[in-house]
Length: 101
Image (tube, rainbow, N blue to C red; front, side, top):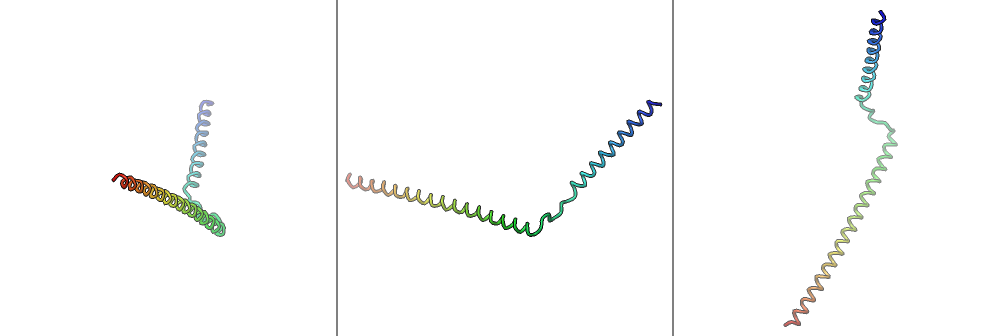
């Protein structure tokens, strides 16, 4: 009879463990499937966050605008330098062309 009772005890333990695993799994599934509430913070905090985000975006825009103006001014100065060098070379070529004839 003791062999029979040991088998029943193992079966009951396995059944209880299976029920617990299924219960925990279903709870996790329910928590994972349900969407979170739409608004978690008060409207004043959300508005402050929006204002902060807008200031951050404006600061990045100003930074990138300044960088673009800097690079644009740099390209203009390099173009002016190339134009000056081309004018110098042209002047030298005209000078040597005039002395050679």
